[in-house]
Length: 333
Image (cartoon, rainbow, N blue to C red; front, side):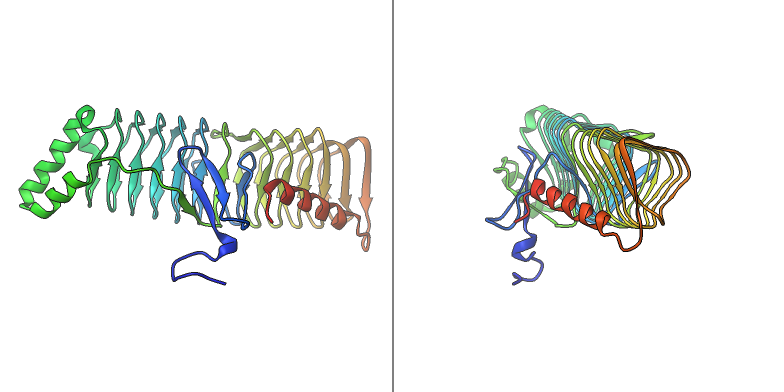
């Protein structure tokens, strides 16, 4: 059953609360575990940018040394430190105390939380909202809509610049709207698209690696440049390319036709599905792979190595058990 035009059906409804960083479902639709990094299908993490189709969320105290480009919206949590540009068709929300050492370009609304620092230019397709104590260059703002100032005494210069522009245009209606919307409204829960990218609290992404403090799931046909360091389990769907090493403290599940240009080091078990290719060594507790997988390096299983033949369902069953376990972690009901 679907809702009104432009709305998501019930089973796709996910809500994001900016103040707490919580993502949750509507009723019994979905509950999301925010300790798990979630990359949907066709996500691309290049050397300079992260590219995705839907909303992208970086939770509190994350560090990012690459830019963001998305057709959806961008949410940066509290005290996120980012080097790179943000380009988004949807809204952009930067929570309090965050730093963006780059330009921000959005076709829709942009929200900058209190005591944040924006070092580059801000190009706004619609409206711009600025919190108290924000540090930025007012000359670097290009807004096609209104600029809403929270607690304007500390940022009076932005208010004056905008009022001068409205008065120059002799737009009395816009001046009235500007004053009416100066008062800060209550923070609302935000509807997030199902095809979203999520990095949990404390994630670190630099030019050479992606470091995740918990479990990680990567969707079909994604591509990542850099080492993956996961403090938990790692689940790779099919048709994924990784240009770097995989280093995990948990189990690793590798789907069909996955290409890893690097080595795998895991404190748990490594299970490899059909037709994968690994260019480096594999070291783990247990290693289970298939006869049609190509491994250019050496295998070292502390407790054992098993090569599954055609017709053996062991790998499929292991993958299904792992996926069920991850779903239980996600809390999808």
